[in-house]
Image 1: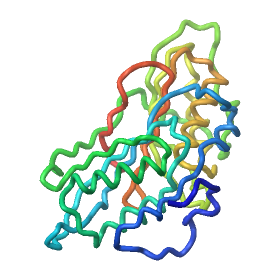
Image 2 (image 1 turned 90 degrees about the vertical axis):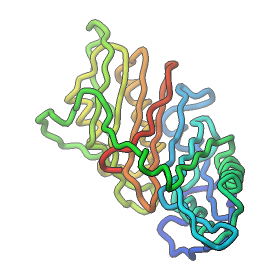
Image 3 (image 1 turned 30 degrees about the vertical axis):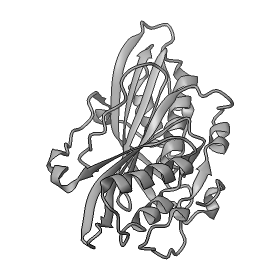
Length: 278
């Protein structure tokens, strides 16, 4: 495994050799610290949460050489010191393609050990095998749809001052959703498309301003996890809700989708149900 380092040194944007036999050294870790310091996070995290990865192109060989396929779900804690760069994640998964394994338990053991080392913390891994593919559910998030608002937009770089609330109003409990989140890969500039669900308790957040703010990420270059943490911190700083949860579901690229969740109040973790665009 490549030591934790900067995104520019990752496989992103570079010609890659696809290895078809197991190679954990393909994983490339990037420390979370620098980007968190950029948005004002020092020391104790102001949230907890997870990054939920779904890998739809997992394949290996059984001991008789017959290909096997599955969907893998990897859950990494938000307080892990590293993220794993997504292209390296894909290259790592592809290294199982011509690797013979005794059973799914053998695959799970390797995935858990390698990815826990990459993230720097224990990760959870589950497999959905082909006989259970029919159990996969597509369901949209619930909440008030911000996209219904007929607004004029002029900002395409994150602009926290678009976020407004009436600090003298009576607090409310709301869940707001938008499918208009788009940002770009930090290194390659390729587009990342997502839906976001924001739950909060506090004085009412101006919905038009919030939608403009979410759209303002459209030309912004940052990884999925970093965008969600930026959204969380900007809402906390500008609107000061008592409770806040930000959950983004990004569309897949290279057979992987990444779904970061950040929250500052107790409750069940979010559902991993796929959205229509995933």
